[in-house]
Length: 214
Image 1 (cartoon, helix red, strand yellow):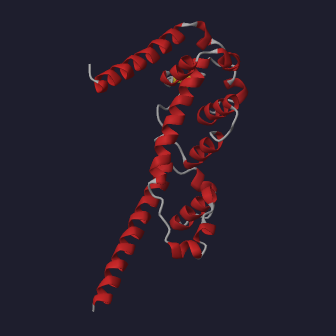
Image 2 (spheres, rainbow, N blue to C red):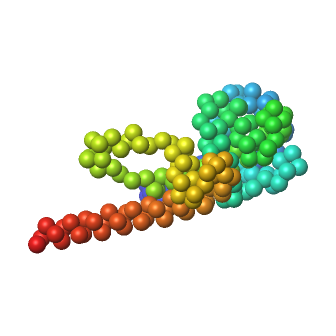
Image 3 (tube, rainbow, N blue to C red):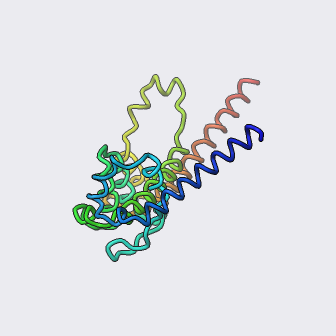
């Protein structure tokens, strides 16, 4: 058997083992423990078992509330709060806060809910946050050396700067209104302005090169 086929077979076996571990874990009573109790047991679990937790799907309901299966329709405010929560170093606190922000269930109550439901929601949120983060990062612009020397990096004001930009662009007085806006609308406006700015840069370069050739 070739080395390439052998590696592919090993990867397949590893993937199947993870799925098997997840199924066995799902069938066990541990995933139905309160989340706070389950987290206390995690240090004693095998690495493969911990990795298998990533296969747990997002539940349709959490504490009798319908759970969105993606973050397509959440507001910019909710997205910002999820991003802030995800920066916590404490796994237990982070998970409880992420689920609380998305479902409006108090964090203390989340801690008492079934581990399988909490982890399922967290898996979906983290996956979606990664996807959305890549979308926003795709609009980042590389600054020229002249712009850097002029101090353009000091003009980057994070989330507040983004909110202020969108408010001015749309003629919004109250910044709170921006938080209540779907994040996709904010992103699309950013994308349009980004593409317009990139076009203007290319056009100016073409005009400049044309002048220099004369």
